[in-house]
Image (tube, rainbow, N blue to C red; front, side, top):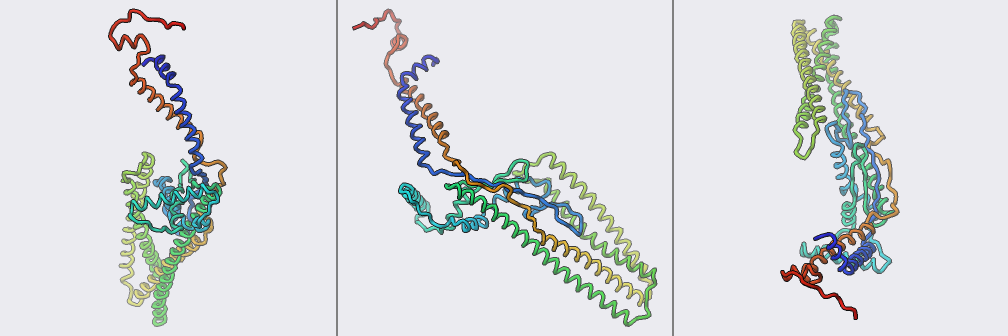
Length: 435
């Protein structure tokens, strides 16, 4: 179909097309006043990974929400974790109770009451069709489900900031829900942090009590031995050898712990090189993991060599001290036991002090940097969008209808139509006569 012919076609049906476009636009505009307006409010939350203060060791792993934060874990994964936590009942239910969203609201406008009644009846009818019966839902559970459906958490690209947003029918309520959700989430995170650190401090405290008891048990036989054998004293050189043997035994224990830690880290890095199919790993991240893997393997080999050296030194020192008289040998053994117990107690004491410092930390890792404010205009429905979409669809349908009607209409309007229909050449035309 040529352009000129197409324009003539549109011109013949312009009234129908114009009426369809106008009615569709007016209907869409009226629909925007019937649909429930939704207001969007959002708040920005900062995740601040922090280094823990350590008195023992030199680890540098960051933690967020008390979960490890290695470099190979993308921030989007943490944000999805935050999103699931924020949208969980553990956070949403306190928000609902704090704001009183489970309390019934009484509409003062008659058409709003009718709308609410109709919506409830349709919901009951749908439940009846699905389950065959209608059950009364708890108001708190219904409010929690509603908040969960309209509460979202989205990350901000290349930052440690994520956005909590909520779509509500009231702008003030939308802002209040977002701010309350952020506050409850920070409180919930802090409670988890404190509970975990308190549990860790209590566990180390139990170890400290056991180490103190072990130290007392090690010192008591040495004290009794000295009381029985006051004349048995070790020479200064021999005492130094006994102390060195005890120190090497303590160092051997710490080396075994370091080997176990390095082995665990090595296994974790090897698992990271085989990510799940849903995880996309860039070449840069893979290179970082490989570099860490090689460094950990080298560290593990060094620790194993150190352990072999310590074990050989301890065996040689033990053989050297084994030639002592029985009294001196017993004295050296008891003294070595005390040295090992003292070293273990000192290590556990430092760990306990570190646990107390972590428990006393008052700066949370997650904080609200930009609270939500009540929006002035709704997020939806956007009137121009509805009207424009309806107008465009009506225009397309009107043009399609005009083409169909033109195809079905067999009226001969031009000489070309007559020649095509009859298959005969046109000889003459009769001009219209003036009355």
